[in-house]
Image (tube, rainbow, N blue to C red; front, side, top):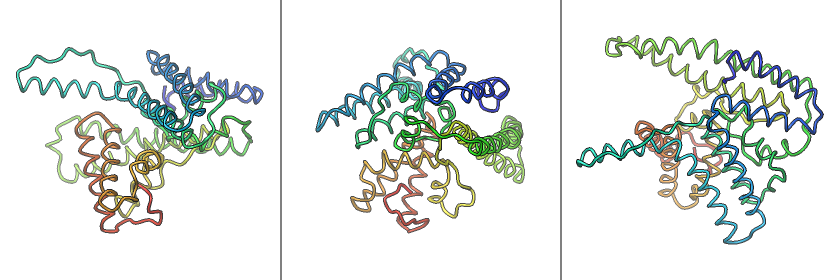
Length: 357
């Protein structure tokens, strides 16, 4: 189920809003959590129990970690992060790894490894990243959630589970654990934001997508120069309006339910440099990479050479996160190279020096 689908717009959303606003404050988190589980089960029924079980395991590991000190605390933090990342790695990258391994076996005359392809659960990347923000934020001193259901709501809340934005635990914990103030103004603002995102998705992205699909599904070699440029621009706009439209819908839905999600896009196509572009595109991912990868690697505190290496590592892993394929690896590697080069030349420089870009 996606936000622009008829089942969501005509059945799921109206019924949820009716139940949510008729209920007392103390029941609203439970209603929203139940709706989120049903929403996920609609799209990935085979994986919803695995998602719930993993969420419960992380909750109790982090609770145990919060009462520990010293090396034991750090060990549990590392173990919890490894558990979350291993979950992502198995479902997202095992097929890619086995395919490449079998290709290598074929080159050296070894029988390929038998393998049953693993389907990718929807939203697993965003689920994993939010699990890591919870683990690391609690390790750094934030108070863990007392109730399992509150943590499950943070991880599985349907507006941002499928395509973000990535919501940092420290930014939303209070909104979940205390009674949220909702008003007609916030609901209207949320509905307007949702409508803007829905319009981006349905009226622009989907229309452009049909044009791009026809062009790329035919004889690409037969496209003239101007036709190729039109298709290129159309695809660029489709990608932006689809992703930013979904983010707008997620932010709008969150606002309706009393949550304040961070912005995810800020007019990226007006950027004057690649560094500026990545500060404006998928902002929540850049913020995550800065706080949970770039800074732990040392940021820019260990000299220029290490700074450039850290930048390259961040963008290489960002490319791998976007998809399991060599094209994504190369995409991340050359973006990391360009970002490091701009950093060296002082292009797109910003005041806060301890940032990824």
